[in-house]
Amino acid sequence: MTTSRARRIALETLGWLLLVAGGFALILPGPGLLGVFAGLAILSQQYEWAERRVRPIEVMALKSAAQSVQTWPRILASVAGALAIAAVGVFWGVSPDAPEAWPIDDKWWLIGGWGTGATLIASSLMALATIVYSFRRFRGVEDPEGEAVRVSTPEDD
Image: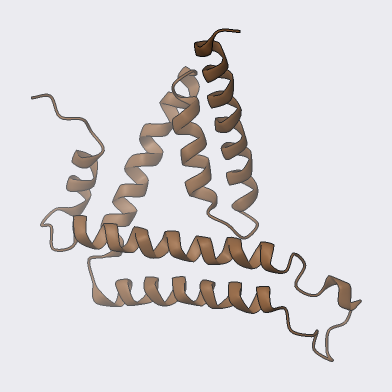
């Protein structure tokens, strides 16, 4: 097997894994949209259908990032939400005993322990990094949505 073929198989496998994991993380703890976007970005190198879907997702993500830092209440709410997710991750990892009111068997209390807690903490860190990026890139820009579209479009010089 040639190196280029092995590389292609590895990238396609990674792309599909990220796409599927991102899909699951949309309903489970984890950075779902980030996983879906990363999977599509990798698969777009091989598949035209994926390439057609990457651009609209990128534009929507950048527009959302730009809008999220235009007011202090939005920024503070985003930071508070990210910190709350981290706190839940730590709580989940520590896994205290199930409360008395827990209606089912204790083995179903906070399933996953530190594995699940770590994904929540990682999601929180990614959210905080995204907030910092968005703040530095889009805060105070006169037309943040236009800037987001411009940023995601390679300029022809």
